[in-house]
Length: 223
Image 1 (spheres, rainbow, N blue to C red):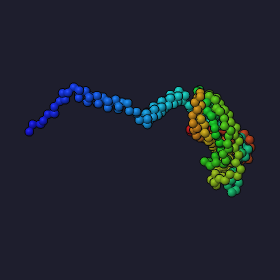
Image 2 (image 1 turned 45 degrees about the vertical axis):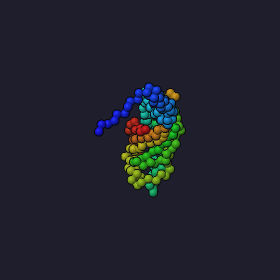
Image 3 (image 1 turned 90 degrees about the vertical axis):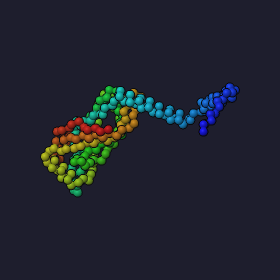
């Protein structure tokens, strides 16, 4: 059976009405307000991309380098053991820190220091005052670190007696704290800083005063 063909609309008036309805529907869709959530998501995405690009550009320009620390002097006022194994300590160190950055200064918001011997602390942490480190500048610190009757292991106590008998004692000065970088008007968030200074001092049992540094390489700095 042959299919019946639908007659084409020959009335120009009816055809114009249908086309007008279609145009009206398209106009209503165009006039319909857009979803504000979609617009907000697009705005946030563009803002984050621009902010990230700005941070990357600033960081590439300034590129802060880690500060440098070196122990250049040490004085021992007390370093003795007693039974049961305790260590009493009183020492002063001269620590030089250098900011190598030409465009970035450093703000130390918090800094503590202690001394360890054979990986065991022999003084409690001492809080150092916060300070501002200018660009391409050097700061000298003179922390006095004291520990009265700090409990230690037998191995540490015996090791100190042996090292003093040989006249060479290995110590570690540790600095812990928080710092911020400042470049122009831009300040970063706080970063943890860990400074480890391994030194060798010439020390015999009972000696008090300035001791020679037999080895004091640049400290290891982790940020």
